[in-house]
Image (cartoon, rainbow, N blue to C red):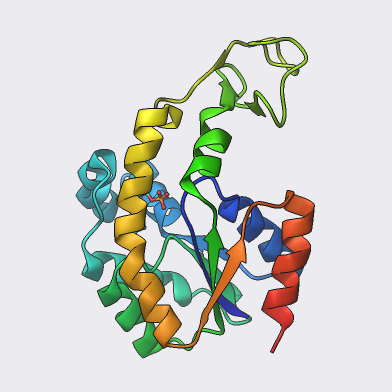
Length: 210
Ligand code: AMP
């Protein structure tokens, strides 16, 4: 099962990748996570990419493809994988095609308004990091964490202006990629608005369909 998940922030793509990874016992490979691990380990590569990640720019294609190729040498990848955050450019998609045959590319679709509502309502505990949502998963007492009583705050990048900026960047980045996979006959558009339990069922169905 060789899958690519694409979609903007706020679609629940990461949560679904985790569930599919558990379900099929295939690794969830996020290039963002791979880069952050290199930075945490203070490796040469980590030192090279830290400033790029801090700025929010994309890491050059050759470095990004190399880190994925290296990850693919792991024995756990033999049965398949879920790529998340890769490819992000046409060059990366073409490179990936040259060394790997994908089964499906799932495009998590959600309108900007819904994404804005989802992300702008998110609150995080300053103390223990638990996530809440003012509408969908509110704490028992407003502004206070149920688990530890810590103060709940809004992440800087969850502020509406920041979200709009992230979405604009994402739409620009993904447009050609979506077109590429449509032409390849691999693209499956999935409405990401249902409840996570429903989403998971729908996702498993499209993954297993021929
Ligand atoms: P993410 O966790 O997917 O938001 O990625 C965090 C950061 O890692 C991005 O802002 C980029 O700097 C870098 N990154 C992750 N994936 C890629 C990719 N496929 N191509 C280039 N840069 C990437």
